[in-house]
Length: 122
Image (tube, rainbow, N blue to C red; front, side, top):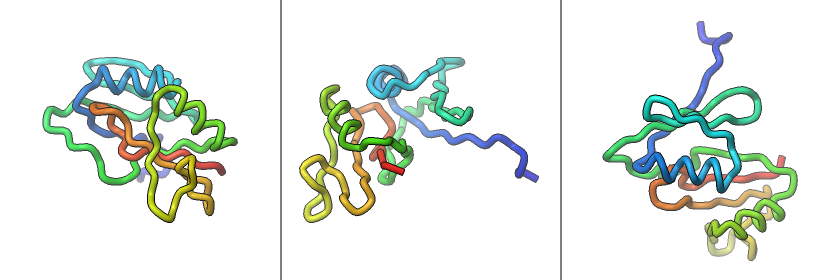
């Protein structure tokens, strides 16, 4: 029934303008705004639907993953943009990376929806 459909994901935010800045300017994604929502354009042709929700509560789990070729460079670039990475005792190195699977997490600023976002090396 759904095998041939082009699925997409979505999540809520409490501040659509802050989400647009974070995903568009900080992460460099193409962001389209229409009818009070955002569409994050990602590789592969699918979009992610971002919608405002007045009583939004940030997720307590990873909602968005970005594979990167060089996680150290990605961490450095995002750190230069003011992004702070999560550090977990006995799990992460000085760059907040899990050495075993080259993964790191970042909590976005208030109003931005990804908590935590994950970057990983494939």
